[in-house]
Amino acid sequence: MGPALPTRQLVLLSAVGLAIFFGIWTGAAWLELAPRRFLPMPWDVIDRAFKLTETRFSGQTLQGHLVISVERYLRGFILAVLVGVPLGLLMGWYRWLDYIVTPVFDALRFVAPIAWVPFAALWFGTGIGGPTMIIFAGAFPPCLINAYRGARYVETRYIEAAQTLGASGLRVVREVLLPASLPSIIAGLRISAGAGWQSLIGAELIAANAGVGLMMVRGQAALDTSIVMVGMIAVGLIGLLIDVALRGAETWIKAKQGH
Amino acid sequence: MADIVLDGVSRVFGHGDKRFVALDKVSYTVADNEFVAVVGPSGCGKTTCMRMAAGLEFPTSGTCKVGGKIVDRPGPDRAVVFQQFALFPWKTVQQNIDFGLRSLNVPRSEAGDRIAASIKLMGLEGYEAAYPHQLSGGMQQRVAIARAYVLNPQVLLMDEPFGALDAQTRTVMQEELLRVGRINPRTVMFITHAVEEAVYLADRVIVMTRRPGRIKETIDVKPVRLAEKWDNYERIEDVMDLESFVHLRTRIWRLLREQHDPADH
Ligand SMILES: Nc1ncnc2c1ncn2[C@@H]1O[C@H](COP(=O)(O)OP(=O)(O)O)[C@@H](O)[C@H]1O
Ligand SMILES: [Mg+2]
Image (cartoon, rainbow over all chains, first blue to last red):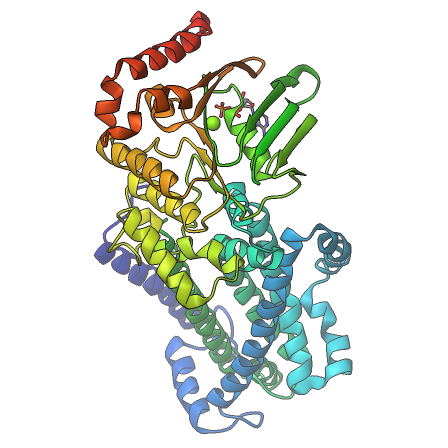
């Protein structure tokens, strides 16, 4: 990569990028490259977004659908972190646990989260349980893998220091492996957050009783493309917010540890 | 009783072409409450010996016993000061020093007092809440020493602990180590390449040779120290001026020079 640019230029360049994007969109819509109904103008979509916040579509307003999706997402993501990170760290310390979990995990992680949708719907329903399971399936592997790798690459001198100071295995995991792997874990959480959010929307497109994904499929069924686009934009913005939050956490932790 | 006994210890690293003998039938004893300094060219196996006493490394053949028991694991009864400090970067000075006390389940109020005392001893007042990366190399080394001292262990294993200190601090630490040792003697294995430091601090100095690592000679300092009344002098430079000191120092220098490999330069 080239040298870093001053913030003012970066902001300007980002604005140029967005302007080009909307320019191409507007141009394509104006030339009617696709029928106007299927490729609406940007301002039509924005207008539609405002309307969706006032009137219900498929049982909920836009914010109603978003709240439902985000709530499911948080449940699944937090569950994945709470199970994946400790399990990964423990596997990085206890060899026997590594040998028990790894074969099962390696086989299952190549199954795309979406492939679980039929089972998730049958086992846990299309309300909260099913979608939560899909998010979990998407978000769990990066949590576990990054915690595990982080733990395996901790410098031996820290582990040895802890052992000479009398630390038990669990204390080594909690007070050495966990803090030493935090940068790797946070990087994993970023991947995991993205994967979980994508899996959720995918799952809601297929089987759900509410949520942004459902709003988008219903919009498509009604041949109302602007609703689908509102959904896409909302999904993108929330994904961006999640990533920005985790990136902030990453910077904060690195600064604290003096990297 | 907390003596360290290395009995016919060999350590081989690597296999095939890369196979090499780091330690070759090394035997020595650090008696209970004795202070032994180990000197030798770098790569002669000083650190490896110390790691065996610490339970971090194991002999290929021979035995290493501490307090009559074969060492099979690390533990807070043998405090280690590592060559590269190994302070936890994510813990403050206070938390680093506290780490071992928590393993020993020392009551919190007592732990507080002990930490404060060791912080005072090492001149770290005011840095309790600092993180290691905010400290200079010398300050980090003091934290590493405080973390070991605070455990009040029967056995102290120190790997070039004053290496990163500036000359003045180093002198203060050496005098302090001697003073603390007189009040509360313990078994110390002290690795250094500074010959004067070894003679000043130790009851005995072990000189090692390289390739393979062996013991060349053991020099008894304690009888000389007692006979010449080194303890009557407060300051290190006064001891270093004594003829008896110079004589021992020169003898060790010669032993190290003899094995100096010209191919190294
Ligand atoms: N884990 C290891 N694997 C391979 N070689 C090692 C290992 N530990 C030490 N050695 C080698 O053994 C020799 C002695 O090392 P060490 O005890 O650190 O020497 P010293 O502390 O006297 O400088 C060195 O040549 C070193 O490279
Ligand atoms: Mg060494």
